[in-house]
Length: 124
Image (cartoon, rainbow, N blue to C red; front, side, top):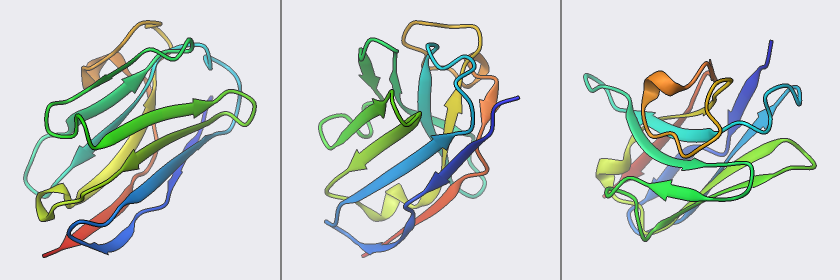
């Protein structure tokens, strides 16, 4: 069983930057795809970014150009650097790990392990 723990959320102002972290408890499945999602109240969980073990990445249009996903293989940590934050970025942010897919994985159904989330609130 792999546990994922997100951190780095908080209350920020529009235009600020933020870096989210996700620590994985074990190296099991660590070569598989990882991703970031978010969920606002009353909304479905939304894909943001995904990364493969080799470092290939893909982003949703909503964050493309102002977000960077990365992973530290040595520490089993996933990151999401976000800049120029907007009030519509307010949501709970989740990291996820697949035990099935190696490639870029943009669908919530492709992931098997999820963290409990970290709240990001952007004030205008």
